[in-house]
Length: 88
Image (tube, rainbow, N blue to C red; front, side):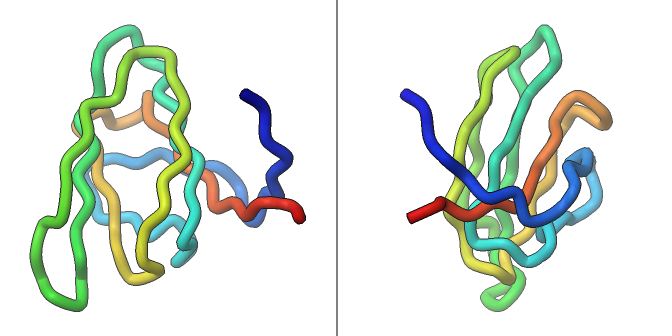
């Protein structure tokens, strides 16, 4: 499946520090590592963890989140996130 997306910011590593990915509601996440990455989503308004994802090695997902949600990963350099939007 292919999509046409708008890239809205540079890619940045998701590490153990909270990252809102430019407060984007739509994020493309790439795991370049050879192992599964654990992605954690945290709601900063409610101050609660909302989800965790086990992301396969060498894979891409498109994640919809609230602008105030932040992401972390257990991989310091292998998981990259980019703020995106879909073209109409």
